[in-house]
Length: 338
Image (tube, rainbow, N blue to C red; front, side):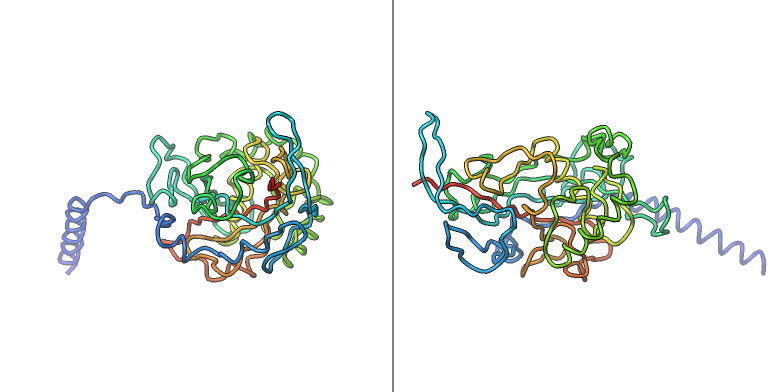
């Protein structure tokens, strides 16, 4: 009997080896969010464009950020320094996309393709959830220009196109950034983190979390990411606490890093009517986010740091929907010259 049992085990092992030799080796899987498809009309919160401010008038409902311009008339100098007069315009616009993924090089917004030349040793993960120092997850991010209003040739005046971006393009992959993989190395690009590495500064983030729960941000608490945690360091490591929160925090840190490098600028406020200005600290009130993949937010968007209890329930799909793509909405004030 013992011999028969051993023989059956050997047959099973041999069968498994033969099957493994016949089947191709598993390959890296990257989801396709189908951004350039019919989802451009079905999976975008078109109502989030409102309100649109034209002088003193507001068209449509919605919230205007507290730092937005309240001017009615404005003037900007042309190339010869001659003042040109116009009326102030302000609106929310979908301006960028952010892929947040675990597999290095994975680009859901590029049809699920994988960037060549990436380091396969920098695979991300969701963390272990042990609630200790070893349970941190890690994600990469890819930052894209996505000026949907300009791409569809809608109602934004030409002089209000901040940065002159008119098409969909990858602007920044985190795989090329050594500071994204190393918390200590990231510290040298944002040394102000040392000033808030204490209990009182972290306790102050309770107020930030409470404000985001009702759709507001406190820009003076620049080191806080609302209910998502601490904004620092600008790296891909974060505590394991569910896909929506982890990927949102990674996206927010990536956006903050772009502001620090001057690649993103401030477009909100009276001082920005004639052009965007450099803002090393992230102007959180200027932005709102909406998940585009795996489950699109089509009825609303949310402020940075807003608790996932308000918008993140049911947004995780096991295996096929554990990476995410977020649409970044930007409030833009500009002067529409007469």
